[in-house]
Length: 359
Image 1 (spheres, rainbow, N blue to C red):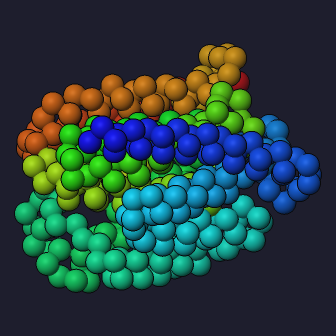
Image 2: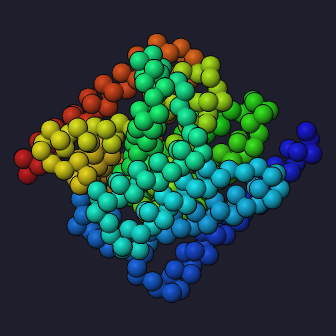
Image 3: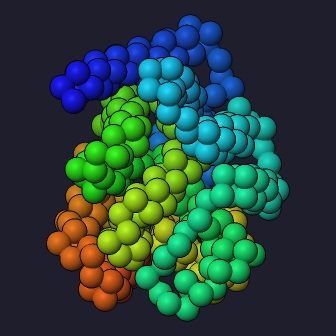
């Protein structure tokens, strides 16, 4: 056991160093080539809150790091994670097309996402056995309904990740917290050592990206990075839930609440306003927090927004860890999170609206 721990520590150290070097090389090479194709220079799009041209190469560096991690991981431990490789590669390529300015219509992108999920879910036999709701558990016995439910889980997390990317550190900090919670759940299970090592590798990659993205952004993840990291997080949640059957499935909904509900609420809000739910706007929670901080003359509202949201997230999620095995209490806490989100959203929306009207 001691020898195995030493090997794991050496492996983690090597991955940390190699990942950091990959990020430096990617950034230096991009600057040396002065390749404008990766620069995000569309300052007029609704989701743009930066004022400088910043390359969207964080996803590329992250994916290269993950690929090297998986190669060394398989060589040393013989542990295959083909499902992770398939989803990360497929979604990275899909998002990377936009990063290199090959734009796809939103509906085409959604269709391609569903095709990737159809192939991955069926080929790797991905299942969600429990939802915390009896009627949903019965529905999941049907193959078509099961595929629809699992696909929606992936789509909410992937698109939620892409939605909050663009603010310095917001997505990276959030995914670090989520995967750290998954790691803490699995840490005492000796049969999950390989999976825990893989979770640790993902956290390392996110930390290395954060060094170049927070508090001042030198790079962005881009759609490629947000898509593939979101798909990994969805897989991590499913596997952690399956490996810890005593924990309520609703608890995992609590952990993924922000990513899920941001997309869900946005979809409902736009439909209600008779707008296309596939088109971006400037009315998401993190954008309202940014606007509020800007009105209060905060010096750096962008990174402060990321810290504020993630600190609040930790504060709201930690209590649920004490009753994570109680399905009923988890349901109540999920409802409380929903009410807190809605209250915060409408309060901030009204405050920023009143200020705009006064000016």
